[in-house]
Image 1 (cartoon, one colour):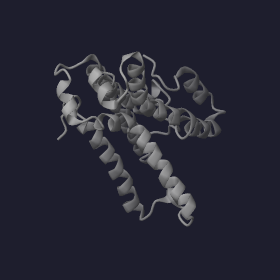
Image 2 (cartoon, rainbow, N blue to C red):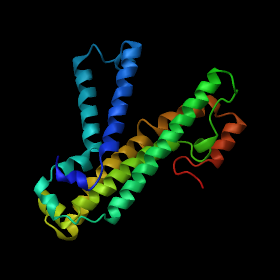
Image 3 (cartoon, rainbow, N blue to C red):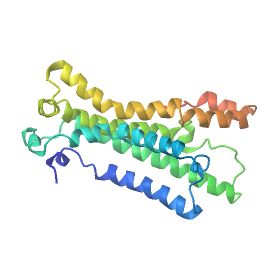
Length: 229
């Protein structure tokens, strides 16, 4: 195995990706088909467009990992064995983010199940982390990708990383390495804020509960993204 894995344990991240893939697969098996592709299933150009769009999305999200893996294993021997500040900060962000997202998702699932069982009559969730942020799961998602990027940036911005990547060194090399790592969380956060995450959710709930005073109060007093203390 490449020595690059000694800088950061990517196992947890890989397991999360595998879990997400398994969830999608199980969903398809359970339903017998994937409903989200119904409108394009019979159109080869549209289906190809969806495929390549998703491939681009995955590539941008994986950019820090791909950059790290492009560095020859022999180059990592020159890296200091000691844990760096970017390792610590990156790992802390990753663990915090994935924990925050997992707890938020768990709370939402439990709330939905209790609603089905008629244990409460609430129309929207305002308890737990959902009382701290209107989109705590998305905040956790953005945070965990920032953690991965931070750890990767520490390696890429080092003299060894810059040399192996052909970035030239100096301030320009450091900024280039940081930008390469930042593509991932920036892209994920952009999608959440402008495309498929927050806009769709906010629009849906505004249309459904916008005229209710309790919803207006929750929305007014609860941050959209960054949780309140």
